[in-house]
Image (cartoon, rainbow over all chains, first blue to last red; front, side):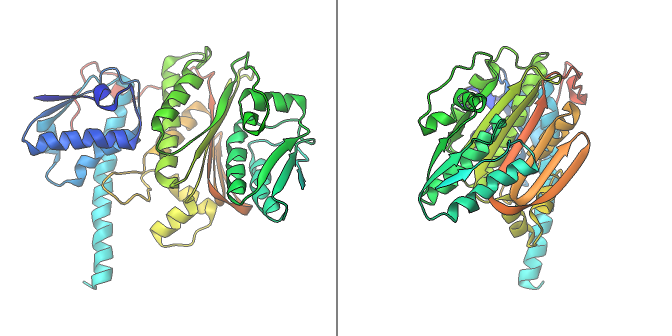
Length: 116
Length: 294
């Protein structure tokens, strides 16, 4: 299993920006492309936002190959502060709704434009 | 040419209206040199420096040069303590009681600068928060959510921020204001929904959980909700002003109003109560063995 140490990737203990979340997302998907299982280590992270997690984790749901089953098998979270755990449930729930709504929105836009 | 400030300026609908009207008032003056005369102001809520700084940014872009005169000594002292007036030739004053959160402006890509600012201005305050490390962490998380929201949606040149702490008030109130000049909520939401809602209606839409104007691969629609839910628990206050809309949540009541003149950006003002002894118990916090399932 490969490990991503968040503190090293974002060079600090504040995981708040979309751009830092994007860095983590790109690393995760690189490992997935190479058929590797990934552990993300949040040790030493003092502040975390949904903006960071939307980019790092929520964005994974933009790729239909990354199903819940796939992610449960290939992505593990370590050392998440107790008070930050709720953010993961919120972000994953929101990501599922967002991509479901987005698909519906794009389907209806396409049917208006294409007349189908 | 002089513009007189005749009354106190607070973080309320009248206060924001007065500051936003300055853009129109100043633009009607041909003289590029404009003096802000503060002789009528006995109280200026210091976090509003973020708004005043943004108004001046707009005026300077319109080739105006702003100077200040006739400050009440107490008002001048606080605006020198938070270093707002240092941009206009005034000396810095020492903040002996550690009650100001300095006025700063950041370019949207300078997230490192904003991180250091929040760390220095909040974590290093001996009273922040007065009761619990956990409350302090939640407040910082809210501020970063708000800042990221401004960075993502505003597409602005600068984000202005300023705060003020009132340690002697019973609730030990802490105010922080973040302002971006750029695409406002009304433009973003109406363009996304292809509608023509008023400013306050679009803010109400944006404050509902799950509503977002984002359309890329990164989901949105959570940040403002996280803030809103926390402010409710903390018995604090949120005000959002964008274009001609004013939206406020305070003690269980949402109030919306329209402004005379639109603001070319978004103002977000948060009030936290640091004297909050509630324990924010969240369901996922209880277990020691947490095994997250997607």
